[in-house]
Image (cartoon, rainbow, N blue to C red; front, side, top):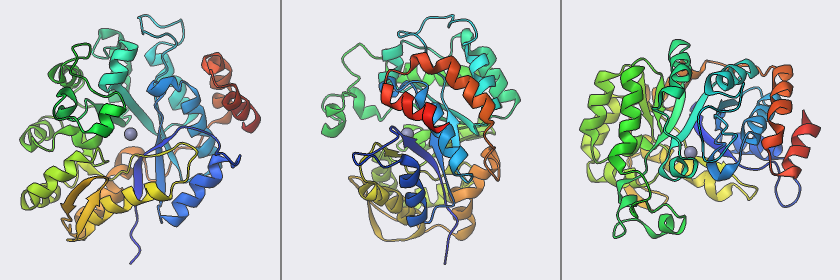
Length: 351
Ligand SMILES: [Zn+2]
């Protein structure tokens, strides 16, 4: 049986691979081979200072593949961030530009501890109020990364592969875990109808009762189940509990893989998406990245919600079309912030 699946959480870091192949070709092939109805590219301009090129590449892919969705990210013209941003680049102005271009939602990474510190940005500052108010008012859906697994604050518990990435946050120079969550709770308090899915299960797989509270309090809040694989270990330990949880909250949970295209082949990454699918659809033993668990074999009704209906409900049954003129204006306005000349050349040539 062919199942409809939308991968709601995808990343794109480059426009080409070592052989000079265009990324659009690679992504098309990936969707086809993995039988995906659509992918949603989540732009993350503050990740490794990738900048506004993130939004531009995502929009270029949407121009090429009309079945693709893309969520845009705010650009920070100066690092560390200081309010106000340069004239015309404040968060609300950026939001209006991005919506005019035809993005389907907003991706937030500002509360991932590394980036939060790197940019010194506190998005619960009132400077961001009008931006969040507009998202709330217009029902603009967000996919939002908050914190990281709590083990990343503990030198004895952080898995080595994350230590190697520089994601140890316990040296006193990063925000404490609770403070990171408080930023989000402050924003939800002010904007209780925000439409948002927190990525990676909000890193709450050991505290599902906190998630239930959140779901209870905020009608438009959900989580995605992109690995961050540690949650699959927790799911496995409480398999019956979590099977019931997934059925009860099937309206709040969204499928995604967090696959990132960086110019290398995608075959080994495709496995990650399939392992999450197996977790949802089968009762087999499943390894999600390095976490062993056992599938929860959900009923079809819950699967359809998690695999595509919840996403379509917040992002639209079809992706928004790209307004090419608005995109060209955006490129002209922000191109000076792109450090990678080859990428800028590609964007200018391709538009
Ligand atoms: Zn991600």
